[in-house]
Length: 317
Ligand SMILES: [Zn+2]
Image (cartoon, rainbow, N blue to C red; front, side):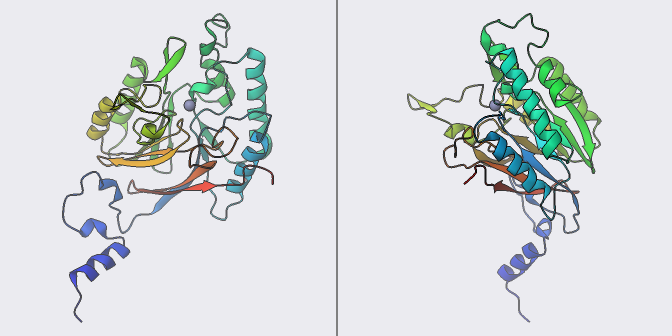
């Protein structure tokens, strides 16, 4: 039987044998899957929940949590990549407490899955209020660290053969912030990458994207015929981190949120996924083209992943 080359390639692809095809795959090495790969785990990624006790948020968050827990092939944990509550950056101590109490009540009552959360800019207390709470013992990030029950504002863990690194993206800049790692955290990250065995795939989670294309679509980003992307939208040391990841080729996946838009960028063997927002446009519907959604991600033992964005019924009919 005569098989055309095209036919062979197609069947090789269908058999998941892409790695047998010779040639150089620029920027797409992560899509070469091993024909014998095995799924290590399935996780859900929730970002930018912006939970508050009012409006559509309670119904929407509960619905998303239940949907994930009732899936036939349900995820074994949920990663929350920040902006968990609506806002404590520019709100009072009382209002912040109300939001965190509600966050913890919802998780206790509606979620039986383990969670792996981190902080977003809106989870930081008081920075936006011009020093009003500067002397408060909860000022800054420690309050969120305690409410989220995480060991520190950045931390790491192993899960089913993958290593997860959870970063703190929010760097103080006046009464605002930038996407940036402080020196202490950067040293820690370098050490984490160094000590993780080369055979262990790494997933890095940050609230603010390390690298994304959707930041160019967030608002009016063209000024005088030049692109203008503020440091609050994407990590300002993206180039440095790109170089660092390139030295550690087991860095396979970077997850983020913050922009409330969805994209997937693949660069030098790393997939960068900015996974929209559970709250969509802050519980008022879509943000631009994107409805409220979360991600379901399958992680494989060869460092590849597959994922999809799941829209859900966020509002009572
Ligand atoms: Zn944010």
